[in-house]
Length: 233
Image (cartoon, rainbow, N blue to C red):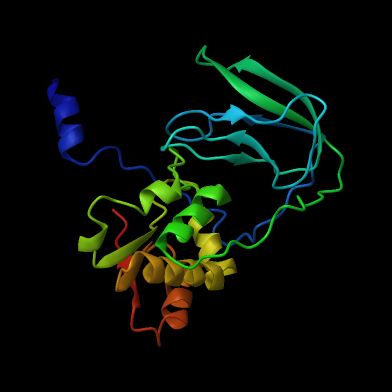
């Protein structure tokens, strides 16, 4: 290995400015596009199999791709409209992927089959995660139902919530903390209850002081949840 590269790796990699310029910008909802293209491979693991065909009408929340492997996740439509194609397209790296193309109707009609899951035990909690389409926000899009079921679950005493958001430019975690702290805490309490984990630490990097302050105030009287500030390096 060249000496310069060895020094770079031993020093922890490239130090990139974080440039969190959108940290104070509230989330804005984009208008519904005329057409959406939904790849059947949006996450680490096996791609989904399309479960709709050309001419089908779909609603918001209609399943358009069904996961057929453990490390995979169902894909649901984000719009209502008509499927105009199920076809392969080539990405810039030269590989073909199947996509579902939907021409939107602008109505954003929810799928009538959508209803709150009935969670009564660990198995139904995992099933609810699996059927929700929830994945991690990192680049791998790792399925959450797999993530919360490690082989050594019974040995885990602390749930870590990764809100560090160490990637440059991105401010997704920061806005989620500031705009939806209640749903974050609801999700944490559900995980603690059904996974049988006694405590939780919410880990937030020190370049998000408003998020740290808000979550500290919201958990001040909760003995099971703490907020841990990590230092930007």
